[in-house]
Structures are given as structure tokens and as C-alpha cells.
Amino acid sequence: MRLIIELDGPVFDIADAHYAAYHQAAGELGWSRMDQTTYWRLVRTKGREADILPGAKPIKTEQLYETLPRYFETEPILSKFTPRNEIGAVLSGIAKHGTIAGVTLGTNVKTRETLLRDANLMVHFADVVALTGSPAGRPTELRSLSDGDKRTLVVASTDELVRAAATAELFCVAVSAGSCSKPRLHRASPGVVYSSLDDLKDSLESGAEDLVAAGLLPASHLA
View 1 (cartoon, rainbow, N blue to C red):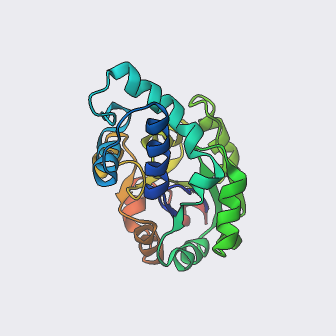
View 2: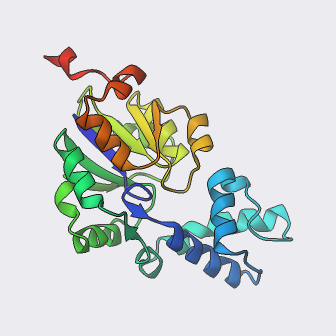
């Protein structure tokens, strides 16, 4: 089995970094900011449709969304990522079932790798890759990372990656620990939606019956 796991959310808590990028971007636009709790709730539930600039015209909010990635991918902002509690043990348990590749829809792989090494997590990953910014190119990249393994499992925390996995015809589970709420992830139609990577580890350790029922090829099929 090969596992392709999105780093931002499942492995790292990104809430503080996300808000810091918003706070900086909105400030440079000369606009007032909402509090972090409200911001994070709106972003997770509504995505780019969330009104995160109180009183601003839609074009101004769209301008902010277009510039946010540039702020988010800086080293000072990404340094606010924090590893999930006990994530080392969780990844160790998952790695017993297959090779893990870490992926991000962001661009700053170097800083993410540094964060993984600092937390002694890099040992669990065979590779760490930034997927292309073009949605049309991501399915090809995911298929390449799968290396032809018919039991590849994509673990996504964004609806964008869920849809890319579907286009690549790879089985996908979603984890609602990042920038997308469970309802948003469900609408993208992954096989299963979990609250955390720990839930995936528990499933794999107990035979993955829920995953197989949702469409993952059982190991016995390849025997």
C-alpha cells in the first residue's frame, strides 16, 4: 500500500499560521480584521465564499484571497505550524501498512521539511512534494506518486485534493483537521471522512473494513 498524506492539517495544526497570514494581508490592505475564532470558522465552512473582510466589497475580499497564499508560504508564517499531538506515533502506526509520501498544495516545501525534521517526523516520509498550483495537473502528479500501486490511499484535508484524487481514480479519505469542515469535505465525495489521522491509523490496525466497504481494494485481492 502507498499513502499520500496532505501535511497541512492532518500532520500540522495550521490554524494559527492561517490567521497570521490573513491578519498580515488584511492589515496591508488597510482593512480591519475579525477575531481568529470567527475567521477560522468561516474559512472552514465556506472557503473562498466566506466574507472575511467586514464591510468590504466582494472584489476587495477576492483580492485578499488571491494574495493570501503569498503571505502564507513565507517562513515566518509557516513556522507557526505545530505538529499534532502524538502525530509521531500515529504516523509510525500508519507506516506499518505502506510507504508514505507527504504532499502540500502550498509551494514552500523546504520550510515544511525543516519543520518535519525538527519534530523528528521526516523519518516517516519517503518523499515530500509540493503539488502543482494548477488543478488540472494534480491528478497526474498523484498518479505518479502512487507508482502504480492499486491500493494507493490519498489522505486529503482539502476539497481540492479530494477532487484531484477522484480525477486520478485513486481512493481517497478526508480528514477534517485542516481548512475544510466535514460538510465541505463530504460534498467533495471522498470514500470516508475522519476527524484525524488517528482514526485512519485505528482503521488500518483493525482491518480497514470501513475503507474496503467504501471502495479501497482489499489486500487479499492482490494475493
